[in-house]
Image (cartoon, rainbow, N blue to C red; front, side, top):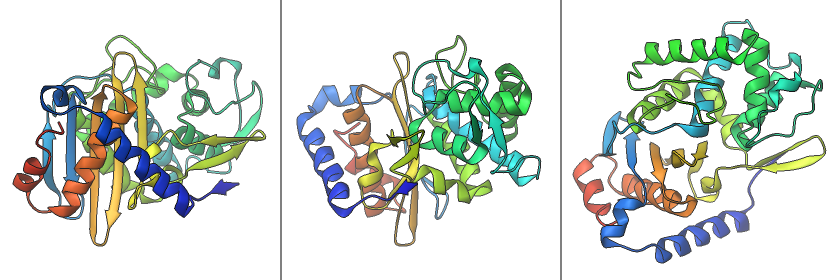
Length: 285
């Protein structure tokens, strides 16, 4: 059972973000709110903002966007079905964020996609990768092959979860490239990324994306590890304008969301002017 956001819930999210903005210092401290950011106007393809776009940062759970991309490619090619039932291998439980899969439980591909998008389930990513490729290492080869196809020259994936691994790295620009291609190839993926919560195994699991309550925001994915800081990919639409924002290396969830929210507002106010966006972002990042 899926749940849509309520109007009070939307305004609560906005209020919390405003309070977060007021609590964050300006000036020199602003540079520490996030390490990198990119914003693209998907309606016209214009890059509206970049800050350290090629800085190497661990992707954390933004990795799962590529995991889902590979899975949905298989579905599109008819090699996999959403209603295919998968038996969870005990080794799918790897710690970190989870959708609470039980060993040897049967779940559908659709449920695993939901668990990755909403709850950032590492167990979901492991279960689907083991089903498709036999083990996560073989699946990761598919992820890196896809990254090369997309021109993500500064990205290396080491696992399908985003859990810390030596050599696993990406950039804000590469993540923007990934998200843009993913949405172009699989626009139906938004059915997963726009959910605020879902029911599974008798529990309600909430979305890790706390920005879904902001008017216009309809996705996409968050991530965090100690090494990466707080990462997020956000999509938003107002009227005919659709924006894609990537923020990486946030010093806190509030700081990350504040930067992403500020970019969204600046982008909608000046959807064709990088100069105006940069002007509006002074003192923010």
